[in-house]
Image 1 (cartoon, rainbow, N blue to C red):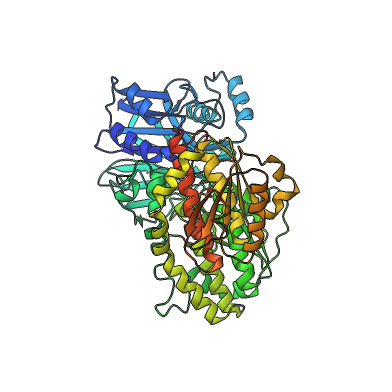
Image 2 (image 1 turned 90 degrees about the vertical axis):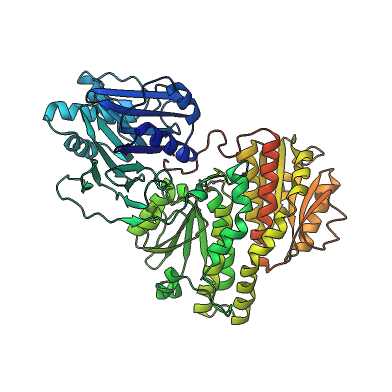
Amino acid sequence: MCGIVGYIGKRRAYDVLIQGLHRLEYRGYDSSGVAMITEPGELNIYKSKGKVSALEHFASNKDISGTIGIAHTRWATHGEPNDINAHPHCSQSGRIALVHNGTIENYTVLKEALSQQGFNFVSQTDTEVVVQLIEYIMDNNHCTLFEAVAEATKRVVGAYAIAVIDRQNPRQIVAARQSSPLVIGIGEGEYFLASDATPIIEYTNKVVYLNDGEIAVIEPDKELKVYDSNAIGKNKIEITELQMSIEQLEKGGYPHFMLKEIFEQPRTLADCISGRITADGKRVVLSGVIENRSKFLNTNRIIIVACGTSWHAALIGKHLIEEYCRIPVVVEYASEFRYSNPVVNQGDILIALSQSGETADTLAALELAKQRGAFVFGICNVIGSSIPRATHSGCYIHVGPEIGVASTKAFTGQVTVLAMMALLIGQMKGTVTDQTVEKIATDIRRIPTLIQDILSQSEKIEDLAKIFTYAHNFLYLGRGYNYPSALEGALKLKEISYIHAEGYPAAEMKHGTIALIDNDMPSVVIAIKDNVYDKTVNNIQQVKARGGKVVAIVTEGDTVVRNMADYVIEVPEISECLTPLLTAIPLQLLAYYIAVNKGRDVDQPRNLAKSVTVE
Ligand code: F6R
């Protein structure tokens, strides 16, 4: 949610900033802006509603010189997307410019107080109070920018990652973080700053992740200085080496990141599995679980908190853990959990499941569980992100950067890790036989090849999408392990095509939803050969009897559903608990092609952002 970039060094800052904004556009894309100091006293700020390309167009005939600058791509929280509310925001005198990711909760109180001191506000944002406050403190305390930022961070309540520049000093950026991510890249006599490492990787692989409460003073040709929130102690800097490549951030010949990420799944899942199943296929190795063996053996309950697609993966995780470990699992929306005064007992394990590792609700939920004595375990994709840094232990899904706003490869990575985790804990507890572990572990290894087979049907799914592009509503039905798949299929369609879709447990349909079914309401039914196959077949009959069109996802060789449904897509046979990994693929492709046919902006659907770092 909102992306920040900063640069200070010898290059033209504008180029680094614009390229960085493009990389961070997935975090928000309703408006963007840059601020550069061209010489002491000269601060140029350009802002534009719309995507970064609109900003580039706007700035094309302007002065874009300067070797220091900050930039921002926005996902609006306070104030509609327009040129004025876009960042960077500027202090009243025009001296200080600031970009911000997060939300300032006490901004109305601060605004009121500053207004009484004669400050005028031009935007509707919460951010503007921070830059005005910094100027107010500088003027009143006659202090440096760094001291003013440190003081301001004590007075603001909320989440922020900020980068601030002073037009009188083109040799310094001050940055601070509280609950919103900020990474500093260390180059040769230059520094980069960003909400995540993607804008930095093409210049340097050495980064420092700021911790909550830290303030950084960034000056070219000088050592990076990081202070604690009291601006007293200089903190020890931990330099991390990034394991990321530029190719992972490019479309690689695909028209959209989403399609690339769908087609990447055979490889990303191979990476996710790599080294985690022993060569003899008999055991799973996940060090985060093994190191905390006694916690997993003794727990009476696991709570999984997540949002959106990750929440759907969590529902599959519940099935897996309950089936193979016999541990009760509760799956909660992180946003509900954090405000529900949840019962958390000593010995409970809370799993925070998140692709980005930055989702504000998930982060807050895990902090709450931690305070109440739970052992907190993270399953994330983005290495070094906030959730893995806040948890006691965890494991990564290792599927590489996911840039398309609609999650695809992260979902299958999450389910794969949860499946391996369930086998490992079950084996440690003795609640699953070695034969079962071996059978499922062998099937996990087959997944990349089987997904490749399903992807070879993409043209067929593309054709199918043409038939359904103009439907206004869809029903997605599934049961057991594939009920969450139905929810996920519906979410994929909704978020990128803007067609209304509902995911439903197939058998629940007759308790109300069946009234919706008619010739204009297609149902996508996941009817693979599982323990409720016959019942799902009955549900398909019920839809057909009411004139509904059925697209069925079936197990290879199925003839019963084939004779009943209007269209079928086959997936290979596999252990039942792994079927969501296969059924996800046609559901992703169907949503993708329908959205493309409708001319939607697939990678950056309206109103969305990839990393939801605000409530
Ligand atoms: C949907 C989607 C979102 C995310 C949700 C949680 O395609 O991507 O629903 O799953 O915002 O994000 P993470 O997993 O980063 O916590």
